[in-house]
Each structure stands twice: as C-alpha cells, then as structure tokens.
Image 1 (cartoon, one colour):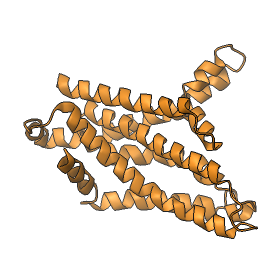
Image 2 (cartoon, rainbow, N blue to C red):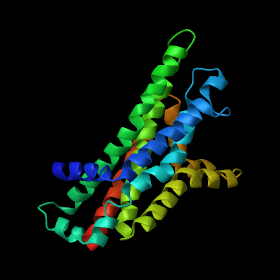
Image 3 (cartoon, one colour):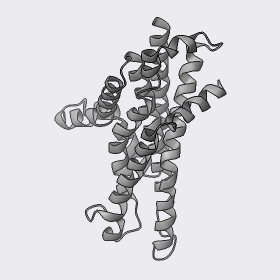
Length: 240
C-alpha cells in the first residue's frame, strides 16, 4: 500500500503538468498577497494574511481536481486499472493510497505559504505582531478544504475514464460545496432554514476555523465529508 502511495505521488511529478500546477498555484497566491494593490498586505498596512486564506479556496477549486483527475480515470482508459485490481490490495486500500498521494501533493503545494507567515512576522511593528492563532486555524482549514476537494476529485475520477470530464465534475462539485450553499443561504435570508443551509457549506466551517478557534464540530464536518466520499469512491470501484 505504501508503495502505491509513492507511485502515485511520483507519477504526478513525472510530467511537466505537475510542476506547472503547483507553480501556478504559488504564483497566483504570491501575486494576491504581495503584488495586487487591492489585496496586497503591504498596501493594506496590517500584519494580516487574510488575502491568502480568502482566495486559496478559489484556486483550490481548480487546482485539486487537476491533481486527482488522472488517478483513476487515466488508469481505466489505459487498461492498467485491471492490472491494479489484480494486485493483493482491497478496493478501499487502493482508494486510500491514491487519496493519500493526492493529499501529499496538496500539502507540498501549501507548505511554502509558511514563508508568508514568517515574512509578516518579521515585518510587523513590533516584530511578531501577527495573529498566530488565526493563521494556524486558517492553515488547518486550508488543509481540510484541500482534503475534501481531493476526495471529491478522486470520486469524480472514479465516475469516468476521461480526465477532462473528471476535472470538470470535480471542479463543479467543489464549487457547489464551498460556494453553493452559502449562495443559497443568501437567497433564503428571511427563511428559518437559512442557518441550517449555511452550515452545510464548506465555506462556513472554513471561516469558523479562520477565527483561530479550532472547534471539534468544524473538524468533524470536514472529516465526515472526506470519509463519506471515500466510501462512495470505494463502492463505485467495487461496482465496476
């Protein structure tokens, strides 16, 4: 199982696409945090990384499905999926291995953002004048968002043998879960169901973590989505 994790992880970097996806992600966030005047922390004048955590989910909606789109779809199209299914691994172990590889790639992509924290830490007046608890909560939320999107992308890859179709489905489902329920709650702003609908949104729980208070309910919400999607992906594989 461990060998499959590293195989999938290394396969992502066997092509230029892997490096390109991570590079575009880091460059886009770097421009938002440091360059664009509307979001630049230097122009804002406060030791705060709000722009980083506000815009990361927007980038994740497209980046994470791009990471996972080939993991099952391409193997089914190339015929190597049948060989993998004859390996001494159960379906849930195959799904878990591919998921772990995707999460490792996401983690590798977001780790450089710690440089932003240390930069702001030293630029603050006085030095260290930054909400560390808020940063840690937001960073945890960012990892959990990436984990949910990776589970969505893997599920989408199991639905088809076409990478592009898997990417489109994954990006659409990620967008709906993060932004869709919040938009629906805004429409139902006068209804008694508005809070319940809003609590279904990934964005609602992500913003809760961003306040620096790591509540178990928010963490369980993300883990619940991840486990549910992993089970659905496993069932899809078993069905085929």
